[in-house]
Structure formats: structure tokens, C-alpha cells
Image (cartoon, rainbow, N blue to C red):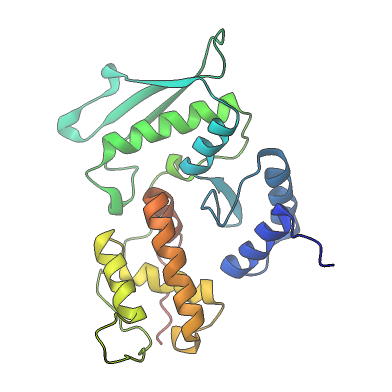
Length: 249
């Protein structure tokens, strides 16, 4: 009888599929994060960026819910806010139980420390960062959250649609895989170049032309699910490809 796959084994397999070979340090850290907090890569709760693990907002909220967190209060730190300049700061307090004094965390955001992909949403980013920091303190999460890190230094690539591998059409009006992917990109305002880089790595190929139809379909399903569940975390993952040389398919 085949034994069930453990959460850690599932995480490790998914991590290798998305990011390739993992260092010993990364594997050990993943094991600890999985066993201690139950984070799931498939659910978009962990990201590997530049060899380091980051937890996502959805992962922290899921953990808080599983621990029966009593509540979270968020208030603006008005002394540090400047709406005209797009500068916002919030204070979040997490209450784990009725008699808890609360775990406090601050978060700030302005055009200089957010990704170009979320420019104009600095207020929501600041609030999310405050909540994440408070949750990390409350539940002893030693790693940073992706929403807390600033913008990447590399300039953003020009947003232009690139051709994806041609997909067969059944001639009855059914959308092709390429149509679905383009719709996801438009609906969630994703950078096609970064999505293509992510797809290439996800499928484990050097160029997207080498990917099978099944691999591309799996990627499109994965992308759609992640975009719906936690767009901010997906944007952080895509930002990891900023500055990478695009492989011409």
C-alpha cells in the first residue's frame, strides 16, 4: 500500500518544480516552516526569492484562523501619513485570546518602496504590512512576509504581450489555453513578460516552446487560482523575475 505524501514532501516537490534545485539550507528551513506552522506552497503561502523563504499574507491569515485568533484591529498612524504624496502608515494589533494585551506591528508604504505593479495602492499595502508584522510577532514567525519587502531595484521591463506556444483549436468556439492565459493577465493586470518567465520556470523548460500542452494547462490553472486567492503574493513572486534576461522562445 502506497503511503500518503506528507505536507513537507508535497512542499518540497512543489518547490523543486517551481524553483528548481534547492540548497540544503532552503530545504531545512522549509521542513521547519512546514512542521511548525503547516505552510503550504501549493496554496501560495510560501515563496522562495533569492534563496530565502517568505511567508504570504494568505499564509499568515490562514495560520491565525487555525489558531483561533480572537481578532485584529488596524488604525492609521496619522503622524506618518501624507495622502497627497501617497505615503501611508498603519498600526495593527493582533489579539490571540480574550485577555491578551495584543501583539502590535507597524507597516508603511509609499511610491518609493512598493512595486510598480501596485503603484497607487499604497494605503492597502501599508495596512497589509502592518497586519503581517503583527501576526508574525503573535505567532513567532521568524521569516519576513513578501508584502513587507520593498520594491525591487531593477527597472521594470516594458509591458508587451509575447506570443505563447500555439495551441490547437477544436473549432467549436472553446477557448484555447493561450486565450485563458491572456484573459488572466488582463483581468489581474499582470506583466506578460514576468508571467512568461514564471511559466518557463514552472514548467521546468528552457523556453516555453518546449513545454507540453499539459504543462501549460497546469500552469494556467495554478496562475488563475493564485491570482484569485492572493494577487499581492503573486505579484511578489513575479517581481522576482525583474531584471532577468528573457529567454527568447
